Length: 134
Length: 284
Length: 97
Image (tube, rainbow over the protein chains, first blue to last red):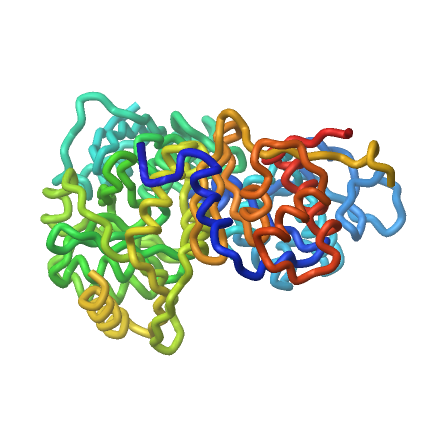
């Protein structure tokens, strides 16, 4: 039906037919990489995006220096009002400059918050696109 | 709501807009393109709120396919919003071909494709070659036919950024340019209408013959790339590889097994053109 | 560890895999999940020698040694790690004997 081998046997037989040295690698060395959807990269190139800090899931919370959502009265944490930062501002902040309107430490905490975003949380798609576009 | 329809390669778009002026800009730049009867995708340029329709108006990007986190753009950048919205439909919705984030030009029925990160120069080099005897096939997305493996053009407006704007104004002396949009999220942007042959032949595919990974800003050099690395890079350059399942796998593996690939570094347009011509003669 | 606690593994799914050997890497498209895996040595070799049998890591290492010159005396442990990796991706079936 096509140029690909239709069965593992057919594709893999050529691998095993000739005797040669086989490098087994190390116990801890993974030998498999799986292809993930590359939506993020395309998103970076085709859209203008922004990241709220924090998103609705963290509304009313502060952000500590590790980027975790913590109760408002937590010592050493920073207030966050859901201000939206653009992808470009976040990209610059990840390179060391501060997010607009924030102190250096506050900006670092916000960037750590953004780094911890997970799929489904507001801003994740935007952050993922920044990762992919370098 | 005002409306404009345009066919770009195999894709038919309907663009709706709250405002007439940006749509007139779009219509003028796309005036030589066919008008489809039935659009595949609708996109809408709408005010974010009633207030924002009149005061510091900003354009929300909406359409059949949307992403969360999309930020609105100022009304002065509505043309960019329209292009982004159309690209988003392709990136999220297209399933009829394997869609690669790449540029392409054609000569003698054979396609040269270029892919790389933003800033690699793939778009500028394709635009430049499009003025130098090659047919421009696209600067953002290139489609691979799932049955034949052919390169299918998607010659939308060429999106020039920053320094590429001045460079192309010198190269494409009789080119039609859109308005300069300074200070967009992607820097200064100005669109260029592809040459007439690119629009007239936008239904004609070509046999993929060479794949290049350009990098701008380094001393000129050519490097070989292993097929497995080409495969990984192209899966990351594709918006729909995973969604296409087995058809994506067979199309992409056929491509990497039949199309030679090289990475090229270059410092300016002349060097890029020389490397392209050298590799084209050697490998196709 | 006694024999009865040793997990066994079986390759070969009815839906099949598409396998494309390239250079040092091999592409495996898994029809069931629609996932493409890019695998390095010794994954293709392990899958190739497994056939349709439930095998322990030791069995697989023995089969590999009969086809290849192995570079490591720790072969069983390495093969077990790779089999567990394959099992976690659904590329082989794992059974606690």
